[in-house]
Length: 520
Image (cartoon, rainbow, N blue to C red):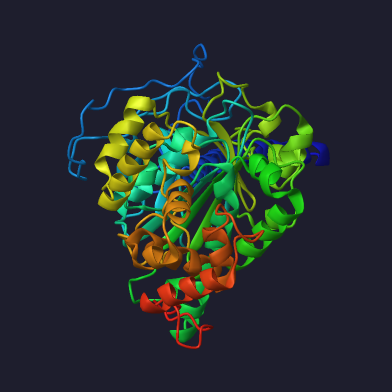
């Protein structure tokens, strides 16, 4: 046999071997890719089938304006328990242009809450992000406000559903945690209409919705952080998670529409406050959720403290990086899997609201995922609010304030129809709201100093304002600013009156400098 024939025979044998071995290698690579896809989808408990079938996404149907909204009970009913037959969907269709986000996520929030409990049975302060279609079925993306997400930025064009997204968090948290474990501070410079009803709940520590409320609310949050710092220092704790006394609930602060707050307090003051609070409040058990349409023109210092970006539609690519923390190209790269499946879309490429309402691209570190949040209509929000415990003192104050407004049509109702509870320690679940400016002005106008010294409303207001300001002179000026007299309402006789009232109430020590309630 010639050399040529020998080589030809050898190459032929090698070719046959390569065909059979190559097929095995190809099958192993295909199975590995399928395993990896199931790993990212959280489906490791299921075996990879020998014939996985097509890996293409479901056929996309016509895009609907809003997700399907199953009806909830019109009247309050007992909250469900985990044994109820409320199950996540087994099939679904993705929304065109939104990666793998579900077109019609289940709008019944009970489904998302139960799924959170299943995914994280021992997790604390878990919240649903939204729904997307994984490898084999719809999945719920979740997060936790302890040992996971610290500060959150929620952005998006008008009607993108920012308030609705945050409400799914608030309801989910309030359902799973009592007012002793969880408190909310809600600041809305645009009037608080989407948060109406929360101001009378036991879970709500602070509620600010008018222009005159914004600065006091910011001061109250700073004071609460400082109070917690002292408590943790005395307890020798490095962070809130180590504190075991049970009298420091997690405080979740929601600031809705940051640009309006900036117009009220000024760009520099707002940026300084946010940078100070977000930098230091995590260890004190305080979590911020910042909402705004576009973070492009906002200060960059505090934005470095954001650990979770939830970004809805933006009109330009210029808004992608400020609202997510990474560039458009990086979003596309991180949001595309090795097999070419797109799971994360830059905000500028998302469906435009209202067709894209509730669609957000979530970015945490280098993880990118586009989801669609459940939609809660007005009836559903009212139903959920009705399940949460009311605060009797806040309800009584609201009724009294409403009656005052009806009898005084020229007064400003914005300071009367809610409970702005500045300066109250969060361990006091039944703290009373501060008295309205109209009622106090009426008292100081028509009563003598001797009568004011015995008036319970005046005494209570003195204590609450002093708890916030920590000095007697500004308390006196604030109480008497509407009464004829000195330019700022301050006189020596009024100062002495306020001092006597504070001492009698136990709020001021004998040396008139150390507040006796500081450790309360």
